[in-house]
Amino acid sequence: MIFTPCPLAFWRRAIEPIRRTFDLRRYETIYITHPEVSEEELSELQGKIHSILASYKGELIKLDDWGVRKLTYEIRKNTRGRFFLLDYAAGTDLIRELERNLRLHDRVLRFQTVKIQDQLTPDSLKALKEAAGAEKAKTPERIEPPAEAKAVPETPKEGGEKE
Image 1 (cartoon, one colour):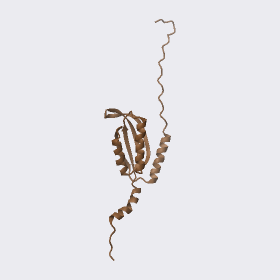
Image 2 (cartoon, one colour):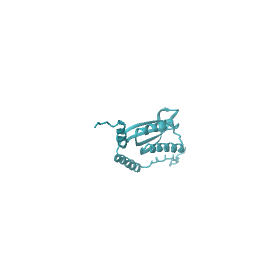
Image 3 (cartoon, one colour):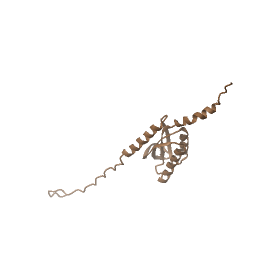
C-alpha cells in the first residue's frame, strides 16, 4: 500500500474556520471631521462605519464624540476639528476597508488606527462591551458653568457727600 499525502490546500481549508474564530483583535480609530459638519453628514458617515463593521463581522465596543477641539496644526485650512473615538473588535480586512472609506470621505480630515489587543476571545469581548456600557451610564452629563455675576450699579454714599 502506497501512502500519498493529502494536498496542502485541503489542510488549509480544514483549519481556516478554526483560525477565523480567534482572528478578532481590538482596535481604536480616532478620526477628525470638519468642525462644521452637519448632523445629516455625520449620521451618514457613522451609518457607513456601522455597515462596514456589520459586513466584515466586526463588533463595535463604543463610539465617543469628543466634540470640537483646537488642532495642533492647520489641516486643510482648518484650525479646529470634531474628534471621534471608535473602539471595536475586528479582523484585518475590516481595517483596510474602513481606512479606505475614511480616506475617500471628503469631510474627514485625519484618522489613525491603533491595535490595542491581540486574540480577543468572545468572553473578553462581552466584558469590554459591558464595561463600556457601564462607563457610559456612569458618566455625568456636562455641567454648565455658573453664569457671570452682573455688575451692580454704585449707590450714593451715605453721610451727605456730594460729588
